Amino acid sequence: MKLSKTSITTELVGDIDNLFNTINDLKRIGDHCENISELAEIAIQKDADISEDGVKAINEMYEKVKQNCEDIINVIKDKDTTIANKIIHTEEQVNKIEKSIRRNHIYRLNNDDCKIDAGILYLDLITNLERISDHCANVAKRVLN
Image (cartoon, rainbow, N blue to C red; front, side, top):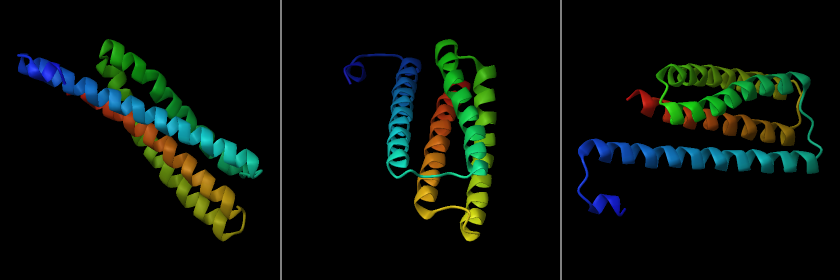
């Protein structure tokens, strides 16, 4: 706020705006991580059981989201456009995985292969993972602009 009251170049205003937005995205990633932690605690308390297929799908999604989180550090530090493009591509893959997980989950629910309580936790987990990846992509897109 103090910077906005000083005379700064238009370019610097854009850089500051990007930094504020990046900080907001990083904060939101942290919020989603907290949500996942809370979901894990609930799953443990309720002894929620996720099918083997469900666990496999989550692990696939998690690995891609984790890679985006690791890559975003280098994007912020080095403004590496190659890595930024990789993050955006991986985010598209995460979106496809999420849609596939949701379809398969509905199939398991319809066939009574999944309990409702565990299913809700499962959907909340994939939603949070997907949003983490979204925030990584937001930061990557700023580097490309």
